[in-house]
Length: 121
Image (cartoon, rainbow, N blue to C red):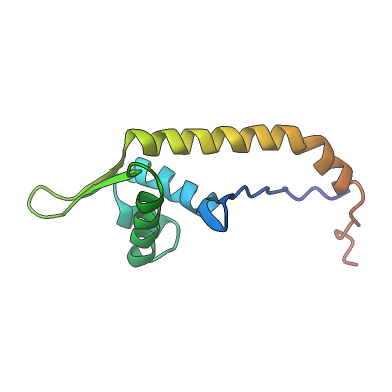
């Protein structure tokens, strides 16, 4: 058996469109933590342009925007999650927890069949 951590990645597809997955979930969480799209993107190692593109994509596909932003200037800019943004993030986190719990026995079953690579095979 292997003791490496197992990672499940849950992506929500509606038709052929990726609407929400791990990257967007992390971006929303980091925006909530930092109050900034730029800071959230930097924390994830992505460009400001990429972070903004993901926010715009999310805001476009959901009924109401998930992120509200304010331009910089004398008062400073920033970004916050809207009520819908907080709801989507909470639902996604709850789904991840449920999937992790439900899949644990099958993950252990698969892990038990892996070869032990610690001996340098």
